[in-house]
Length: 457
Image 1: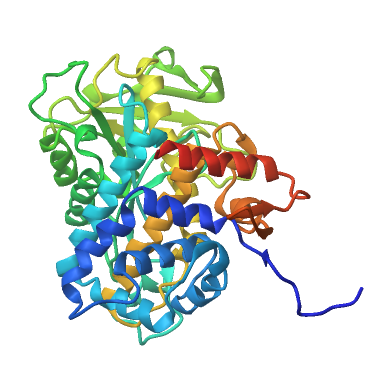
Image 2: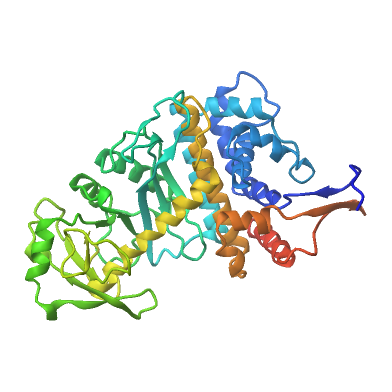
């Protein structure tokens, strides 16, 4: 095999052109440009919305620092001209606290257009917003507000909110709050702030309305799910004030252990799986009347689950009779979810999918916050959340008929779709992108790309 540098019309990572078109079609580019236009003294060579979208697409393609946008720029034959690293840095500098809300509004408008094109969820069901925090390690002490974390590491402690989209492998990134590493896990004010951002990120018609009557078929039903870090009275009341139901992990302590011992054996009912089957070795029971819940919003109830731990698991002092005890507090009314107590417990158990969302986010730019300045890292967080949305919308619009791609996590999706090779040919006044026919999913990628284009025409 002879090696030479004279290839013509060949492009790698051709699939990123799909995300770039999607950013344009959803209006994200124009929206961010409008939000940042007043930060420029004169005309620009690269519109700020285009630079923002290009950085988001580069992150989706695997970039973990600003300089990698130049690697993305090497695909200019598919994507057109891409701004260099200095221009991208200046764009991040311009997304300060005063302009962050404008960028968020542009993202919300893009979400509304993507949903209208076919990426929207079924509003007749429940919209589940999952809250969770994670640790982002910093290997430099020079980064502003990097601090020691509760896990005895050093870095940041962002709090994120994802809209659960089980039909694909990733959720939609509704909101994120970058916090110093020493931020508390159960800070109610932070959860309330992210809740406000998350509801604002939903299209207007998909937000809950406090003026509707309970059981109104036209009302949008939204549930805020969190682990025990979100189980605070203030956060629960904030959900109630905004017409949002809550489902939180409830702290298990000695009083819960005492209640478990008092519950008659015949009161426990089998836990269920998502397919409706019985969960082997797990039982649930509602114990609302056995607890003092006056500080919680009216209608809150507590459900316990006892489950035999998997082999090798370490028991704790709150485990009873060899069973792992967990608890849920929720105000979702009866008969909203089938299965009564078992159904409510199953719905909260599915909050665990947020761990997958965070893992994918860490593979999409969250593992490293590359900037020294605080506002630049906040802008980076907003950009990587946008990258997560673009991938999610692309799957929903173009690949739901191909489960291998729709349910592929981001690393696999990159290798199968975004990194696909292609050849560019010109003839008959047309430019054609010919996907490598040896690619296993070449036909699915081509059809998916055309579906995404058709959704906005």
